[in-house]
Length: 177
Image (cartoon, rainbow, N blue to C red; front, side, top):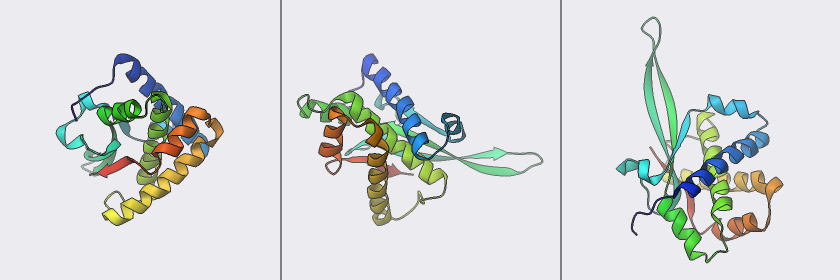
């Protein structure tokens, strides 16, 4: 598949999806929007990704990076930072192949909420990022279930189509370290 990238309108919709997802996920976990400042993550699109951040078969790919932070006096602390790596080409292909049944905005909202749940669960120690693949597969099912619960307050026709069509067909959040 050739590399296709989000256009400016789609980039704007993706940003709006993550802003909305932060509110929904925050409500689910019962913390305010300001709490997301404590989670170290960023979002990149395909045009901004390094080669190891590109993942076939997933709409988004979560990478974790470790930084050593020097403290005072001479204390080193390891800090984790997460990167949500959006796979523009996979997302655009799914929307295109769905022949207008699946809309870009609701798909992006689902992807955003899904990835934020991963960030919270990893950062909070609820799941080990370094777990064996079999455990990661089970975790993916748990995160899908949580994401579906998070989406319930905003469910509408277009989002229902996303939930129905893509829940088992694609890997929304492949894990990489």
